[in-house]
Image (cartoon, rainbow, N blue to C red):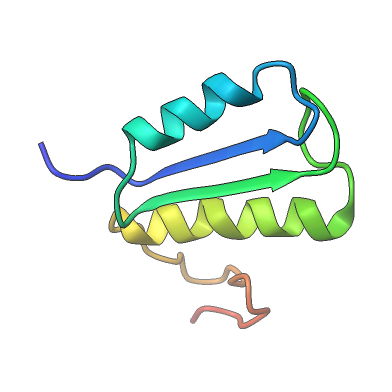
Amino acid sequence: MGQVPTVHAWGRSDHVRQGSKELADVCDGADTLVMDFEGGHHLPLTDGEADELCGLIVDAWHAGGGKDQKGLVNRLGVRVE
């Protein structure tokens, strides 16, 4: 089995932060994408942090061979034709 892209995100005050970091370490590879954000055990709450997480998910999608679909707008705001 080849390398599978993964995304790991946790809040800086998340009660499971340490375990999340350990999981990311196990997955460590070129396509292991990690972020931490302000807050606890929830998704990012600020627009900037939510945008960053979405960008990491799209990057993992592309790293795994995913392609942009025609008619959609990519994360750079460019319409894919």
